[in-house]
Image 1 (cartoon, rainbow, N blue to C red):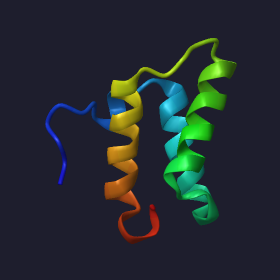
Image 2: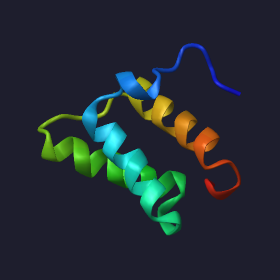
Image 3: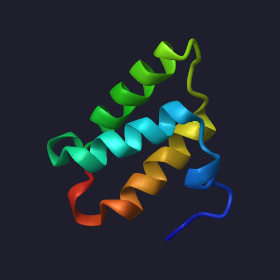
Length: 71
């Protein structure tokens, strides 16, 4: 279920959106650990770090979007 305090997809930073879309393109990457690695790598290329709220929002979106395949 969507949690109200999480940031919707359209308001996430670009690096978080890229991580979600990467999981969309490759089902083998649909794990929490892979998502965290992608978030960190993409954020680093933008010269940023990912705060915990953005990370949790991204995980929530992936859990809902990829339902049975995101572990």
